[in-house]
Length: 82
Image 1 (cartoon, helix red, strand yellow):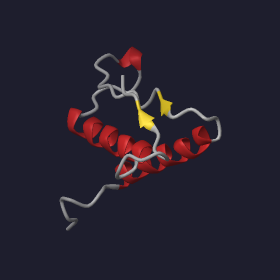
Image 2: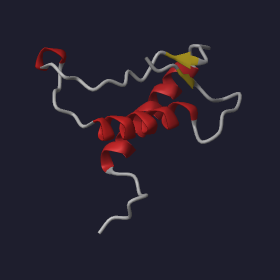
Image 3: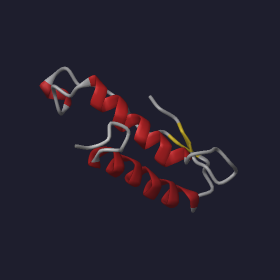
C-alpha cells in the first residue's frame, strides 16, 4: 500500500513537465510563466470532463512546485495561475 504522502505518478509527471518548462523559459530571460491553467471542466465540449477537483488541485500544486521549486530564489520561475 502506498504512503498517503508519497506523490502519485500523475503528480510526478506534472511537476517534471513544469521543471522542463522552467528550464526552457530560463533561456528567454523571462522570470514568470502564465501557467498552469488549473480548471475542472464540466462540459465535454471544453475538453476532459468529469475530472475530480481533488485530482486537479493535486496536479496543479505539483505543477506550481515544479515551476517555483521548493523555495523561491533568484533562479525560480514564478507560476502565474489563472
